[in-house]
Image (cartoon, rainbow, N blue to C red):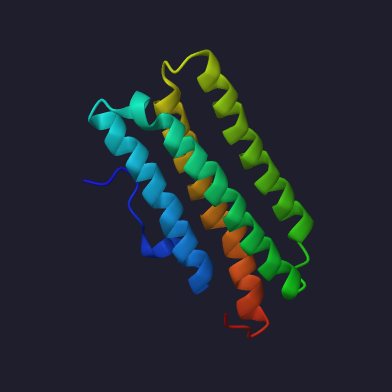
Amino acid sequence: MQFFPWKEQYSLNISEIDEQHRMLVGMIDKLHTAMAEGRSKGVLDDIITELYNYTKFHFITEERLMDEHDYPALEQHRLEHKKLIGKVLSMTERKKENTLGLSSDLSIMLQQWLNNHILETDKRFSEYLAGRGITI
C-alpha cells in the first residue's frame, strides 16, 4: 500500500509538471517503503540526494513555464521553492549529525509540502493558464 498515493486532484492539467509531481510522490513512497522495511538508514543518503537534485530540476521547469506565460506570482512561487530547497538542505545537514527520526521527519515534511504546494500554489498557476485559455 502506498504511503502517499497520487490522486487525480493533484493534476494541474500540465502534463510535464504532473509527470514531475508523480516522480516526487514516488520518491516519498520510496522513502516510506524503506522505513517500513527497516532500511531507511541505508538508503537515506541516496534518497535525499535524488530528491534534492530532482526537486531543483522540477523547480526550474515550473519557473520556466511561469516565466514564459508571464505568471504574475512567479517571484512568490520562487520563494516557496527556495524554502523547500532550504528544508531539504537542512535535512542533509541534520543527517550528518544524527539520523534518528530523520527519515520519518523528511517523509512527513515532504508529504505536507507537496500536498500544500500542489493543491494551493501550483493550482493557482494552473487556474491562471486556464483563465487565459492556455493549454500546455
